[in-house]
Length: 428
Ligand SMILES: O=C(O)C1=C[C@@H](OP(=O)(O)O)[C@@H](O)[C@H](O)C1
Ligand SMILES: C=C(OP(=O)(O)O)C(=O)O
Image 1 (cartoon, helix red, strand yellow):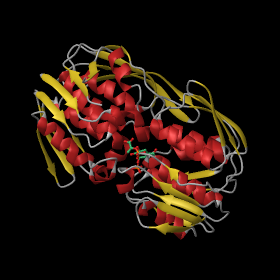
Image 2 (cartoon, protein in one colour):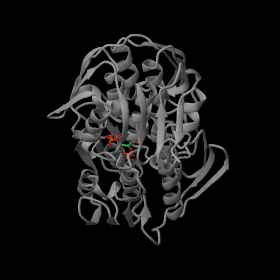
Image 3 (cartoon, helix red, strand yellow):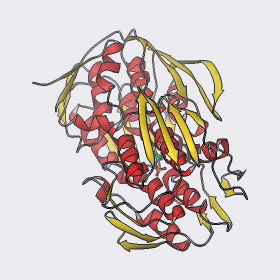
Image 4 (spheres, protein in one colour):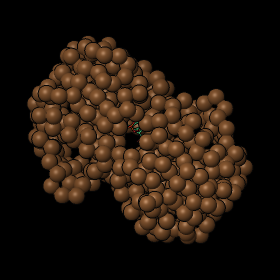
């Protein structure tokens, strides 16, 4: 399916933000590791998350939907699944499930789609092997977990990956030995927060996390906040389409996920937070963005983990900012659903933007943007959504070649964008 975004606006109103993808995967998996019934409210029902739900069923866990976004997971014993676990397009699902299964000591084969089968899995396989797990296969999917962990670990998590950290922590629930993960820069800490909310002792010391004595999970009621990575598309659109003002309500404002909102502020955008409050150990609130002049800025490697999935849309915002934007430390972008560094450079250039890749940095000269291109997404949801937002503020429409994959993270993207007045439609 091809989608086209036409110059639109002004955009206005409340944006329908879907549940957070990271929290949704974790709520299902941690619910499956608890003894008893966990209830989830506001689960993101996207393809990635549904693949995790199906995987847990294959491990013998009862996972039921009883209303829109309302799910129950009856955790307990896991068994080895009969066939391979299909993780679809989802790095989070694959890596967290491998860790959880290794902790439970159940063997399983893991597979994924063409994109996921190219992504690095050695970074999770190696620490799990240090913990005594046995794998067959190489550093990419398909991989077979033959047997689970027997030992602890002190893992240095480089590059700082929340997926690897989470896999080690979930595996570590299956051993009484010391388990520690240290990071050069903190990655998102939702696993630590949710484990603690479910009764596990999690000790934290700067960017180091350790599992304490109590490693069993109690079932819980888990509310899922709005996804800041999805909200970013509306916030960006409001920042670049003249006359706009849009609000993303009930968004997750964990500091390890708020880099994009801070980046908008640094670029001079008119951003306001309201209703900031706690929920399940996380911070949430409403984010309002009003159109106004924005300016190029510099972003360093240390800032990237807090906005890792928002770099494509940040690059789009930079294309409309006055002056130069330099975003450094983007090597990890090459290992996502596509090589996002090179696809963003190609897509922006096709839309008439002055952009270059300088080693692992993206350098963009902002100003007026022509648009008027068909952009190649290589099936990457965030590349598609970022360029559609660009099309709303460009001089000419922008088309993306493969938009079906948007359903992996944001199945309601089109309706949500149309809800604030964006002209995004299917090409027939
Ligand atoms: O833990 C998570 O839920 C995620 C962590 C990030 O990956 P890494 O931490 O592995 O870079 C992010 O890109 C991904 O979309 C979700
Ligand atoms: C990188 C992403 O997800 P995952 O790693 O779970 O595939 C993403 O959603 O941008």
